Length: 171
Image 1: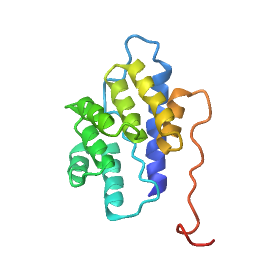
Image 2 (image 1 turned 90 degrees about the horizontal axis):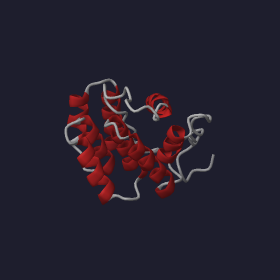
Image 3 (image 1 turned 180 degrees about the vertical axis):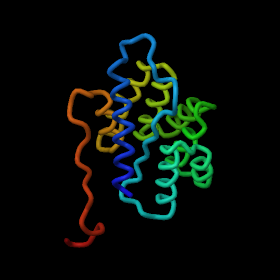
């Protein structure tokens, strides 16, 4: 499951980086389709995390309605971000801006806000959102992904650490 999430995230970053490279163009060709959705559930394996990962995959597969039904079951910040994107474009930007105001230090919210701003034809604001991720949540997957978008000329991502044994156990 981690591999599929990493692959979906990498694909979203690749799309975003490609589009970001053309940010000097006045008419970006990105208004079709849905913005990427990137959640960071870490090493969580609880029922909600499994469901949110499933909803994230449904979103990536284009089944926003099914994804929204799953996201709506939960009140976590990740679920609320997913629900906002699953309703794209209906109120998505307003919801993410509200979440950013409620959770000003959450990188996942800002990363996805950047995607939505970019897809809304506001690339300069998207860049600012991605820069904010790196300032406010520097040690996160969101910051790594924002860095990938901001610096597409460099190698993407950092290796994701997956422990060989559960936390607290000696390996």
